[in-house]
Length: 107
Image (cartoon, rainbow, N blue to C red):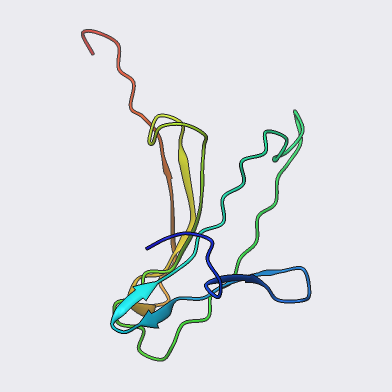
């Protein structure tokens, strides 16, 4: 289940978002922050900095925390940037760029 629902997503009092996975009787919940404003991002020719950190429990088996950004519209046509993913607390962080593959006829 995803969605900005307390207490999964909250401000920590210092201006930072805190997203927490919670056990709801064996059904885990998590959170997602979605920005829908058209003016979010870097100015033309500029840069955008995104930072994140993860704290996983010891062992972490079954956890797959990730930080990613999606383009507006349909996936994968408008892109996805996986900033970081860490599967099962292995501390082997990976990042990926997803996009729609476009091929010309005859290629």
